[in-house]
Image (cartoon, rainbow, N blue to C red; front, side, top):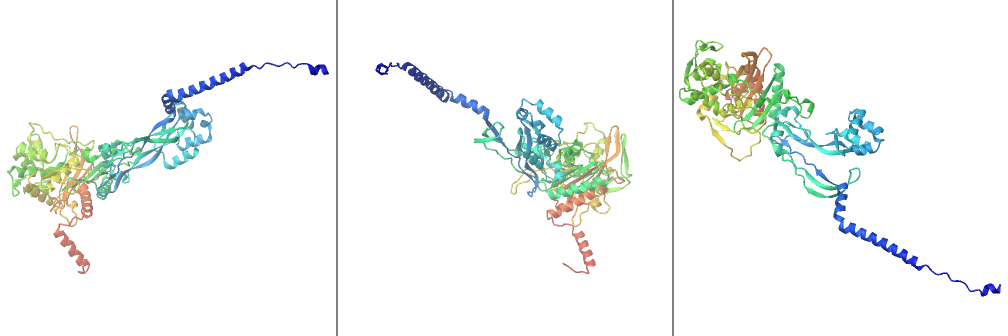
Length: 586
């Protein structure tokens, strides 16, 4: 035991080199990490930041909406309302196989009235895409229901759609926009660039499901569209539409139009067409319904141009207001055809020619004038030329007589055959007569008060006033337009009934027209009513179109507070009231 205790203990040498090697390895590893981190943070920071941003940072648009369209009194005719559109991320949908078999997906397909199997096939065909439109402008209630389903890969985008409060009443004039909010017809298209806003943009950070998690600032502010105020008066427009529709239905007509123009300014106060459509529903926008007949449809104006033949006669100096024409025996043969009156009117003065609507009278006047003297008035009042409203589809009419035309062709043109006009052109021509021969540029935009606009004297003022006075005889007892009378007001106008041309001559279909001015003493409104192909027993301008004129004119006069100018009629009405009421006064 003692021997063991006295034995010297052996010492084990320490492996210090291993320790230092381990320390060196750790230091090298740490140095490498620091170097790599410095390289990534300093040298490659921009490249890596760009790579990261390319996966998560997006430029998102800021929506802008079109400006309002309002009438002259500020009543809205068109506005943009926010709506939701549905889009899909097919990659996200297909990444989870259970999504397309889930009950939520079945409810989603049912809400959009889609066949589930067809929808699934369509999604699979778009499997490599991250954005596809599925449904634009969904119903708000449907959109809310779909949002509650919370299906990954089904997303929404807020857009704007156009809403038209007046619906079909002003549909042809205002027009409509497409699914992308671009104007396609009417004022919407003519002033598209003015109404359209400029969308903005902003930078955002999105997550895996493209949801915005951070906004990094606005890149460009959105600019909303400009508001547009039209010259249209919704109240007059509504009356014109209602009365025209009633006349078209009652007479079984193919269609028609009404145009109301402010004589003093050239502003179009109403422009209605039949048949119409609802611009809020894309399924009603058929070409036969969306055509604005007031500017596109051409017709031979018939007797409504006889006043302009008389204007040519007076302007030439060869005739005066006291001139007379012998229309006996009521017919004459010119070349290969006849010019006829319904009966022999005998000797007529210019008033009588217009009152009786004598073809013989105006034909003999035209034959006394040179071609230039006769045609000058037609050109000056705008026949054969666009009115300049700026609406697409406006026709310039047809006025191109042959250089070597026959006497019969010249005579026919004097009473409205052989050339064609549109309702808006005829309204412009009558507005010129009502403005003492001054031509104001027609416009659909409300004129600014206190601003002088270009005018042109195209007809002698005295001549224009004389012819307007003659046209009053048309509405007087014994004239052809007695149903155009407006209680308390003097009316100057002209009826027109023309056969529609067919291949080889004229058929049995008619266009009936009444064009007039009211009040005749100081015209405020030029109104043209055209009804196309009335199918009833009555097919004359005095019986089909004149009553529409009377109702529209009466409404417009009262809305604009135009004082009555028919003292005789007022006195007669007042006397009748006194008799019925026992002579009492309010």
